[in-house]
Length: 616
Image 1 (cartoon, rainbow, N blue to C red):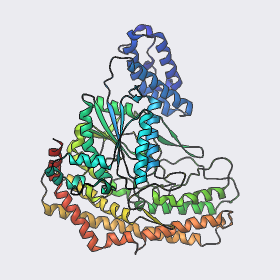
Image 2: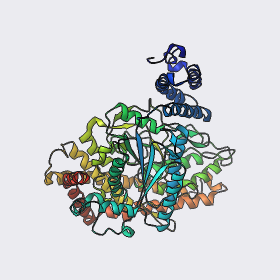
Image 3: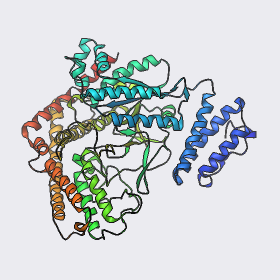
């Protein structure tokens, strides 16, 4: 190994990964540290650590991954950071973490706690003068509730005092940022940053995540300039995410801080010419419940049919090994996105611990049923799957807007079509980036934990267009934004295959493709709609069948109530006369939305020019 002096002993990298456990690697690093202390050998020791990290990573994920192993892995990185801190300079990247948030103080607290925990575990960039040196957080607040705004400000102050350099970028600050643009630029950017005619902070809330991100870009450009010559990266995360991963464990799941995100992000941007990096999420699916209801109904039917064959009082038989998940296994229309067909149903894994019966498992499952409408999918949790070195990358086509990192010069790629407030903004942006950046737009296996639900209440905090009235949860607004978001996505995908946006595309061609995509998608949604109704009828029959064994369960009345609410909510959102279904069937509403989409696409090139001109 180059750079390692003879007195440091044999080269530990001569052994194969199969020959060295994580304990072996940690022990040998400790021995080398003791054998060659002092400044003279510091560079060699640092080189040794860097060459050992891939083996440590592989050993960790091929082992038992118990708490002791994870703690040793984290400690090695902290030792490495101490060596770096003793150098004259540290040229690695500073990372600005941006968290858009709207009326979610509890989620925001959990997200920031995870950032702080990650810093404490791995100490990327070191700590000095009261702060972690290379990590900075910007909270972009789009809240409407005064209490949420006040709590978000206090949360920012609390974490700043705890060592995370945190800036609160609220409604007033956002308005001030826009006012720094001249009148001509403000008028030209209405499709990017929203209506700028009435810049009243009190009425500037709930603009939507895409507009909030774009306004944050303006602040980020100034912030990067203020930071001077530092090498800087910008990372966007969602407030309901955390910097850790989820694994199957006894009695459900376990979360671990076993991914040193900042280290790997720095590695990727230091060693390659990557412009934009994205990662996925684990835990709850990143899509709307409106496109998961079919699969979830399959899973409920499977679970109840299995319960019907078992004795309620017997020991719980729902603790099987976690099934391997395929990409987008939770999505009813996964094949539209190029993914293979998932299994017809996925088996529920019980999350109860200790001695309990099949009846107890059924009651606990029923307790989770209606969390589905807030985005939790109890039968299709996505677990982290180690697939080789975490710093490896592959070509990307989708931006996960809750987990992407870019160089400051990439601020010129704003979130497009923001004012339409459609879902699928990330996949749409991803298709455009793929067309324009090619191999400099990549993905890495650095997923973040996605938690839609607050465990204490079984619901999420604010989500736009998800409304609860009594026991009914209405998804019609989200359903409509999901449908037309899909229309936008597949239209843009088709256009990029024909040279858009680099090549001018006639208005007639844009509309031709748009209407063709919408007709095809409407047929697919219609097919899935009919399947959901059929499955709901099956569930209703099961619920009303007194021959079912679980009618004798001690908690049957509770199970019956929760299952009845689920069926009622699903019918409310998917029956033929449901509001969401009427919205995407209405000729008037469809014409309005399609005209909006066509206009937005036709003006994309103009918006790009205006945005880049405003950035200067």
